[in-house]
Length: 80
Figure 1: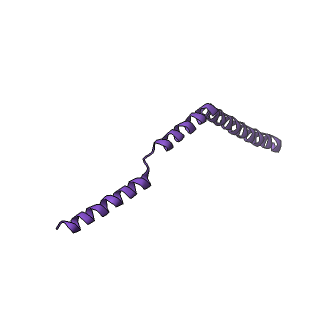
Figure 2 (figure 1 turned 180 degrees about the vertical axis):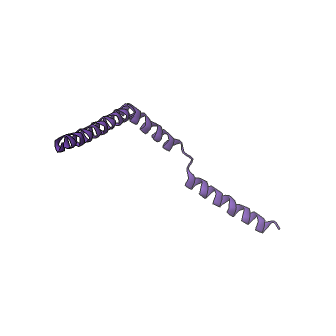
Figure 3 (figure 1 turned 90 degrees about the vertical axis):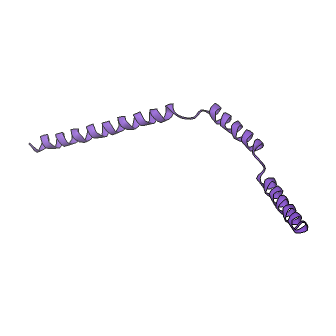
């Protein structure tokens, strides 16, 4: 009788392990199918470089704002 209980427990454990492995394989296949290709990475890099070249130069905008503010202050001081 003990042998039957041990074999039943062993069978249950093997079934659980097999189900876990199958689930893991399914998740791996899903990740592999949704993986980003080298061509997509190259396109993303090109897009980022394009955005970098076309971004507004914020330091220049800050300097321009400072000059406008200084000119406005000088104008206000000279024309009461």
